[in-house]
Length: 209
Image 1 (cartoon, rainbow, N blue to C red):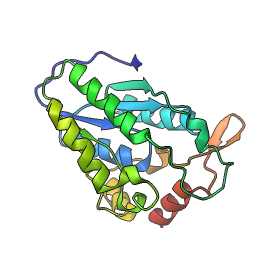
Image 2: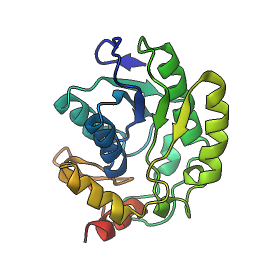
Image 3: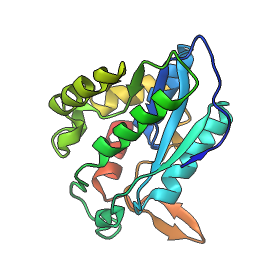
Image 4: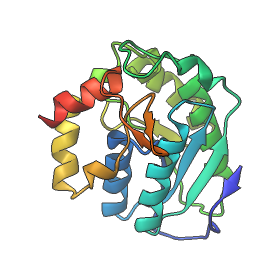
């Protein structure tokens, strides 16, 4: 685990956002920041094929907005998400969101910010058909466990289609081009390029039209 800057006591912020660098999570973090409630963001690495691009997008957002980034390594075999660039289909990694949220709970409790009471993550209505850990039953179950520690786990976009998240992102002046959604990028001259054919690319492109 790496902490990019020191956590500090602040009476106002009380939300921690699980930040992937994608459109949904960056919009979520921007929403929390605009409300004056963002304490810090947790960015996770688990060997995912899009790790470098994802972490870069999340890190740049935190840097540009003067937000503390906590970088957390998760013991998962993210290589299982590598199907080949451009191939559609749900790339579910069982336990991924559960482990990321568990780490976010622990980090929230361990921080010096006594006002952290909520953890937000960004599944949308369009995600639940492919990923069981993006549905309301999962969120409710994790939230019940988190409340034992005085923390609530919330998914504010869970009933919103991605198109509505895009609309909110535009209202909040999110730099959509600086977000990253592709599961398995194509590398060109040492730069990642979205594959255009994975489920995440397809959903993003459809929502942006």
